[in-house]
Length: 416
Image: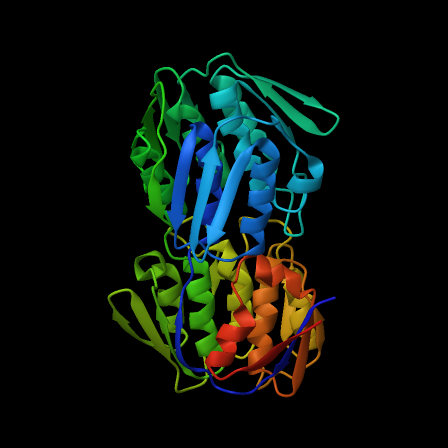
């Protein structure tokens, strides 16, 4: 099994360029199923999840080719309307094919994604909204079977904020008859990126970036071209890598407008910033100070940064409290951080971190994508050798992370 071996204790210095956003490219790829023709995306990251989505779309009948950072998808004939369990279980974003299949082809059979390492994440809200648009929904043998002769516009209010639910229903509403309103919609930048592409295709979507979306359904869409936005989570992770090692790192192609919640907390912790067009330089010249954070939907503090921030707080002066409000089981990295010498107490969805003077290298086990990023950050700061097992988790969302960290001065290598 692949491992990352880290010799810690070195301050990172230099610059790194952010890749395209994983959480944006996956719904963009699913959206190609809404219309026949050839779609082209640039600034596409080289990630395991992108490959998984290519495999799923190929199963459904979508041809795809990737050259460098350009991904071309041709969506003509449907080979299957089923997204099988073997593909869906490896990546929950696979559920994003549900609404495009129903909207364009009139039916879909998609495996229930079930739980995952960080929590249940059910798709009840997707299904409830799709029913409101006139679809017939049945759950059979672990699959969602959905059908509709033609989806109808509806006024939908999500009970809780759901990113994939908002994305799925935006795609459904684009080809529905009449107008659809989505209230309590997600506001994440990736929602805006999908809305921009759908509008390029001929959709009529307004309100992206707010909690209310209005979509006027159209009879057909057309393929287009689009550049994927930069990955704010990757950018933030590199900023925190600079902070935890006491270095100075410049992050290029950095969407600073999407990182305000994190930057505010890092300033409280004692980091200084030089923010210019599309790049941020972070520097720390003193011991970090403890800061409390509570995760919340965008524009709040992202749950996808909670694990990395916890790693940061293990070395901060004082006591910090991290409250996780999005997922019920997203503290698995805490137990691994304790193996490095961190002082962390868990109480339900709250973690209390008492900063220690130093961490010491140890063998660790990654449990999910963001947990693996947390353990790598801690390993970069720890004295001695840290080995992070199950390195495949990091490849889902970070492109060649060991090579990019090495260019910043880290001693890190992949072991097979």
